Length: 351
Image 1 (tube, rainbow, N blue to C red):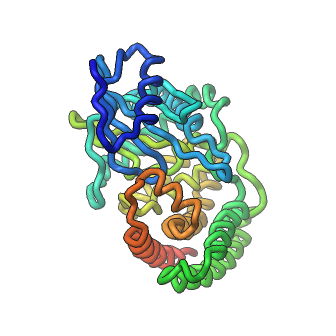
Image 2: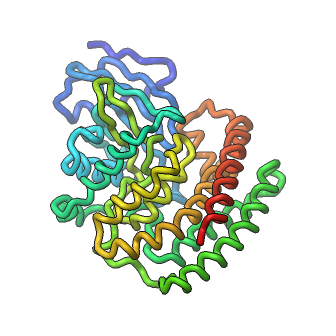
Image 3: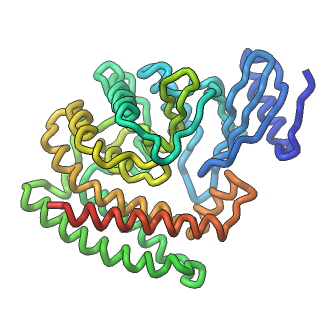
């Protein structure tokens, strides 16, 4: 069957995809179609002689040591065994070209406002399946999640570092973001002082790391922004390039902070109850989760403003060569401002 080459797909990419498919039993490639841009990587709908698959090409950079392909492919194998049908099945990888092939899911993305209590239950079920005793016995080979840390002070330091990176950006390039960053820094300093006082009042060590059996296998960047609704029913979670062993209270913080497809905040208590029950010392995790929630709202403010950092912007442009830089920066400032308001609200309620 002749290769149908869409104009937007360059020949070297198509040749690499053809070589990847040739390593499988899917037959030859019939067509390669670029999919709408994602945040970090490029994705293609590839039709072969036997079926349609998804192929991802992963972003790499000398200053970013993360192996996104290896992390996602290995985690997807683990998740497919622990929760069959909840992730796209992994098919093949081509490390030299930073390509991987997965099952193509015929589904629709979630839109803001669509997430229901039933959907949140499905997310909890998925997380629980990843962390059953039987599943965890097969997880020794998984890496640490990206930026995984296990003490309260280390979580605080993560946000400190992200804020420091924002301060390295040329002020002339920040525009309207500069004033927002200054307000965020002021609120962050006050929040850290409050968290440290509350931790002391509750007898929580800010320096002690979570014990190994309190840690979770986390999808990382977990939420309905990385999920599809199958046409025939059910939810499929995807995008695991940051996944691995992590602090379960960080997973909770991220899940309820990510802004693309917000999860109703009134579901936090039930999500927390069911998730911490999976681990020993649930009361400890419950106390930590309350303190972690504003920390991760602050982190997501920094993530939203990451488009002002050259490396982050370069990654966005890799995923979407047609990216409108001015438009995306304006959009991200609005998202960060909304997250900042949520941070102030949660911080005010913290006691």
